[in-house]
Amino acid sequence: MQLELSILTLNVWGIPYVSKDRDIRMQAIGDFFDANSHYDVISLQEVWTERDYQSIRKAAERNLPFSHYFYSGVFGSGLCILSKYPIVSTLFHAWSVNGYVHRIHHGDWFGGKGVGLCKILVGEHLVNVYIAHLHAEYDRESDDYNAHRVVQAFDTAQFIQSTRCDSCVQVLAGDLNTEPGDLAYRILMAASGLRETYNETEHGDCCTNECVDNSYTPTAMKENAPKGKRIDYILYRNGYNHQVKVLEHKLPLPPKIPGLEISYSDHEAVSAKLLIQTKSKSAETINTCAAKIAEANASAHTDTLGEGIEVLDQILKRLRSDKNAYFALALLLIIPLFFLIDVYPPFGMGMLYLVAKMIFSGIVIFFIFMATMWNSIERNGILSTKLSMEMARTAIAHYDNQPFLNDHSC
Image (cartoon, rainbow, N blue to C red; front, side):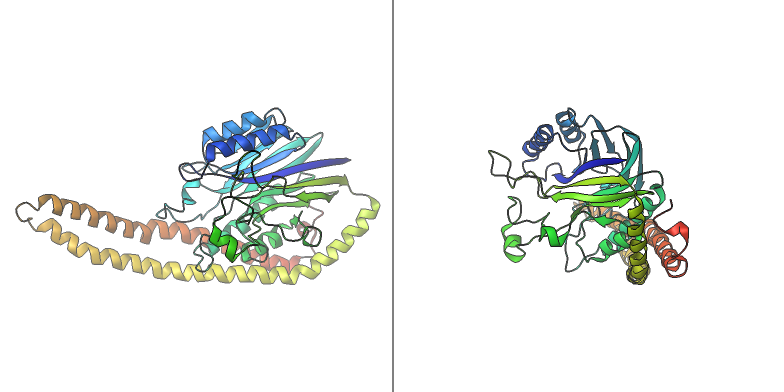
């Protein structure tokens, strides 16, 4: 068996009322997919409205007749997959932690983010295509979401491990919001066994966000970090009895939409072409060497998981102190609230007192909510992942030579 698979991923930046030139760009993205018929699978992120999804889907359906949108959360996950081949099964796993409900300006929580899977039938062979969009960083200096991305990265790796059995190849394509070398990136790669289609030696620097040629990159970012960031990926892992070779990796979109002075998105698209083959006898020798390399890397993987566990431990300690702080603030505000309730307002101040009571009541309810329900939700999500990471670290350290953990099994 031998087949080629061409994949493209793009964060389309489709936030209603926020993303610039959204209607023009969505039309241009659809036109590009319609004019380029050689893609087998397209993974899109930040498709936040039904209208944008239907617009792109209809524009591309001549070449990509099969599609699936992953509905989740308040606004939808923003994730969809277009395919040249039939999608025979889908599954979505929402992450246990995904930002904060009260940080409306960030909005990640409302998106109900997670990792999606489309099982695609290419001839007689199943290809698992995964799509994900990890929590954004927003501020690198004081990154409040690092632990959340660590949880999401490990969760994604576990999901891939648990669902990969019957596929000839697993592909993860999406905006992971983490750069090579970041903890979330290292945990995802260590726990999933995925590999990059990108090769730094062959392709050099590869910017996919905040790029100097992108019309939506602020001038300050172009000056301070002219190389931009690489946070959009196509990752792969061969299935049982198959081997995968990367034939091509590139940024397929031109810097500007033809005839306009704007880019397709604030992210660059990434595409890759894979050659999937049934393993030959010579491949078995290669696999034996790969197994030895994997064994040598086990120590590094254990260290990476240990680093992730330390980050989650710190967050769990912070959650305990946050819980006490929110309760203390609630108690402090209850005192003036009782005063406002019991005291009869002076003449002409009734409306002002009513508004003050509503504000104080809302703040007290918010603090109690953050100290109880929200604190428990975040704690349980992080604690669950921490325990799974500890189990994975133990498995690598003590059972790494067992057949149920190597590449030759489900």
